[in-house]
Image (cartoon, rainbow, N blue to C red; front, side, top):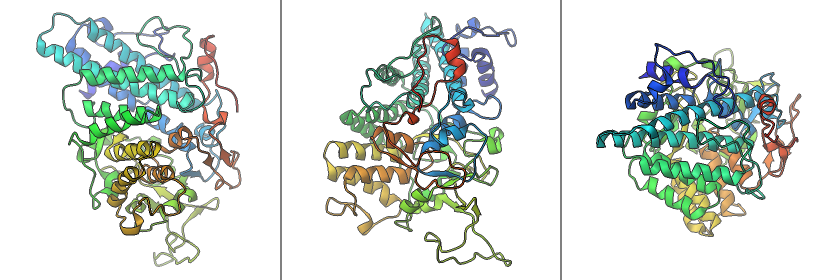
Length: 508
């Protein structure tokens, strides 16, 4: 299956432009043509399996998963860079978007390659006729998986290049180019944010209607799509539907929160061994590219280790030092000649001296490394059960059901080892001004360094506080309001030059 996956990518993904079949340099491999692939259910099954690979596809050093991470997580307040880097991820980290960024260009082009390949496979599936009833079920299942994948690529695209749905007017704010077919897409304009979200919604609803097979969590089953719909509706501020779909996943019985004894080491589990994972992109040890993996900047064992956990996040986490999520932090302690940690009463977190780089303490995250105890190996998680509880919490907070929101938060806090007065109630908000602020901080704690935080801040019309970024060489703003043009990535210059109908995002 792995060999066939690579073969299908070679056939479908040989172009660079958005949705276009132009400029394809196609040479049949082993004398199998695209026409033959798209007229065979068996080969189309391999094509769909190949489409999963786009979620981690590498073109050179960096894969889609790393590129997606670079243009989202690095904009959060959970990270700090210890020195200026010539890598173009710095444009994201410093909120200086540019159309010349190769990270933005890679993200755009990887996404539209995948969308083109998905559309080719879908058209082949739609054209299959005179199938047995068993093959019809298989065809529908494959199309359902494909539709989910297309929805995910578009959901990522619109959150990088378009304003959050909650901002101003989603009817007029620009989203991205929408391609429902593999042909006739030259010169398309950007759809609105609202049109893009509605496109994603249609894909997910159709996907849910087609899926019947319960597959493992590195493939798409109906519950995976329901989880995606729950997140989508939360972003669209349809809180009732967000709760409904989150409940459908929770009540499916397919997933369980990891217990408190296993959870602190969950980064070391393969997806198939993690009862909480709803959908993940499986990375094998043979696919480990070390420092170029998704967490390559976030830890020094096998990676560069140039991006550390921010003091802002550490302050929040260590409000309760017994919080089990402390275990995801990997402090690099200074040692004396005998190999012992050196006491430091000024270190308010650990009480020991920590190695510094450019005056920044080396607190690394282990969230993205050590799968099967292998440095840098990590299978990116798209959805896990804890998110369903916190989606409900946010939706309840926004509909005035504070007690129910706090009940959801407390499920996650109790799993993190917190108890008694460390849990919330309407009579014990622990100095927070609102229940929504509690929910957002809990989501920050739970999903730190999992590429949630940036979206959560801006879609909730908050300001990203980067005032802790005050080291020599920092060139970004200390605060980024949700109204800023800096939160939008620029459409890559090469795409603008190819399409006169593309409108660029406003400059910061």
